[in-house]
Length: 187
Image (cartoon, rainbow, N blue to C red; front, side, top):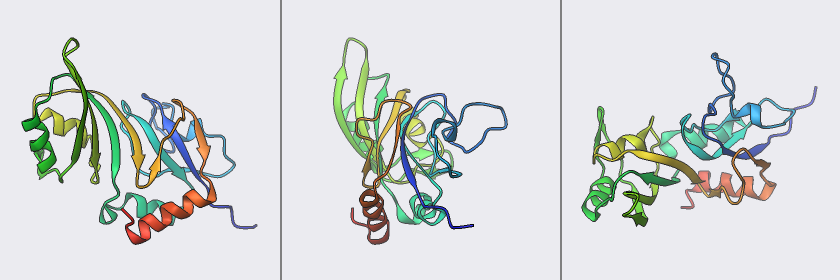
């Protein structure tokens, strides 16, 4: 039997879908959303209640590079919180905050806009750690609750115009660009 072709898919993961190949509780998984003849695995995770860019592949070597903390792969999210964030709070989060038993790595945060009527702030947050529920926990340290978390970029791959639940096969040049990013740190 011949070796199977290595493939990488970009998925716009909807909320309430598990970032796993299978679920012992019978919930829908990201693998269920993609029609592919090969056994795929999510390259990293997105919380059940988060949405956005998730890469899936059958390329184990590429997956290891993408998810291993040593590579410090950047991930960018659109974040909505239930408060009007101050410049001081943004600066605090950017420096790193105490979460559980660790201090979060420095983050980049850009305020997109505030809605004073709805008492919400819309931000773009870039991190490279991605520990369990890290962004949500970061904002909890300043008394804010994340109401929407949507990943728009990972490494040098952008979600683009894919609608929730849509996916596409990455083109060979995109996979090559991603591998170069991971091998050379073209950041």
